[in-house]
Length: 320
Image 1 (spheres, rainbow, N blue to C red):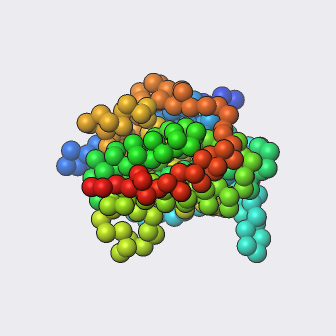
Image 2: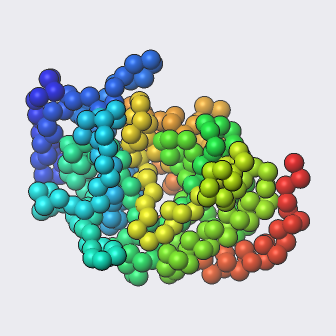
C-alpha cells in the first residue's frame, strides 16, 4: 500500500478513514523498527479496551507530529471546528476565556486521532463526570525523573516511594513513561481540589527526599539537583497533564507508556522504553493494575500520617 492510499476501519457503529496509512511516522534504522500511520492506528485500535478506561471523561492535550517524529510537533489543546461532531469535548476555563479539549471516550475517537498523527495523549488528572468536576483530581502522579538513562536509580526510587506511600495508606501503581523514568499513580476519591493535592504531593516528595537526600531531590532547577533523581509533582495542578497509560511516545521505535505490576519493576530487562507498539498490547492483557482499588482513597488519613512521619524524618534519614 502506498503512502497516498487510504483505508477505512470499523470501530463500533462508526467507520473511520485513515488517510495515507503507509506514511512513515517512526523511521527505522540501526536496530530500530519502522512504523507507519497505519501501524499507529492498528495499535490504538488493539489497545483501546485497556487504554480507554484511563482517558474517558478526561480533557486531553494532543501531541501531534504530522510529518513523523523527525518533523515539527505541536501540542493541541483546542478542538478544531472540522473535527466530527461525535468526538467528545470539554469546555474548560482558562485565564481570559475557555478552551475546548478533546475527550476520548471510544475507539473511533482513538482512530480519528491516529489519522491526525496524534502520537501521544496527555490526560488531565480529573474528570468531567465526577463529583467536584475538573477542579478535583481523582489521580495523583509522582514523576520519577532520573538525571540520565540510569533506570537502576528509577527502580530504587520507586521502591522507596512505594514504602512511604504504604505507610500513608495509599496504593501506588507504577508505569513506564516510554521516555526515561516511571510514574507512580495513586487513585483519589476526588474530595480535595488541585491545590490541596499538589501541596500534599510536594510534602510526600519532601519526606522521601529527607530519607534519601543523597539520591532524591525536589529541586525544580536542574542546576540544583546535583545528579540526584528528581521527584516531580508539578503535574498535580489544574490544567496540567500526564501521559496516559498505553499511549505512544514520539521517540524512535515507538515506545509506549505501560502500566506495570510491581514485580516487573525489578526485572532486569525492564526500562522506561522496554515496550513498544509491537508488544504493549501483550503487556496490557496481563492486567498489571488489576489489584489497584477501583475507588480512590481520601487524603485526610494520609495527611495525618504524613504529619507524624515528617516529625520523625531525621530518624529515617539515609546514611549512605
